[in-house]
Length: 178
Image 1: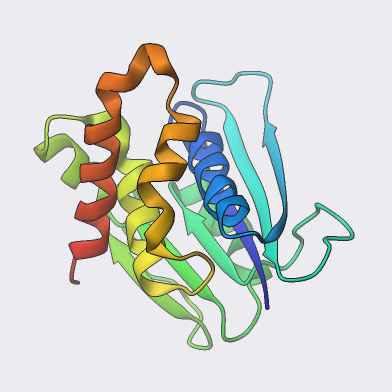
Image 2: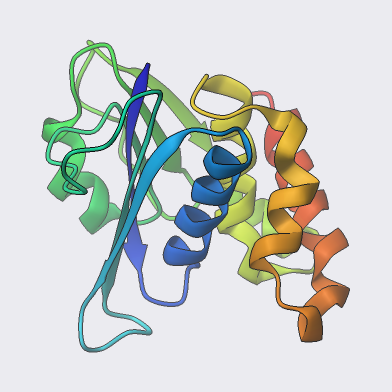
């Protein structure tokens, strides 16, 4: 099995962090993978996206042109990548920042108000991890059994106080029902 995942948004939304976290989950499961971050020179406020490939077989190229899974954190990302998702794929939409509906009917779509949920929980910077939680719940790309271990790999020791907040954000996404 191979999952090609594209996470896209603007700088400061934690797009690259989310991709890194998903990659560590794949590594901990013993999968082959690639993680390819991409961001504009503006960083915060500029465009950012992250390609992650998780596979049972060696990954030949880190480029994700036609993702199985798209996580769109803002409208320009949905506009740019919606048509690239393979038929039968999945699109996760931050419905707080993206008011329009996905135009396609050949993909499975999840509307998660992740920015709103993050603000409500008092941690507005964790909308990315709420989206990741819904992704973990709905896709078979990674197993939820490695969440805590992967978090310990991506959250630095000097920010260990953020481990529980990230875990709770992921659980919030997993528990969210549309």
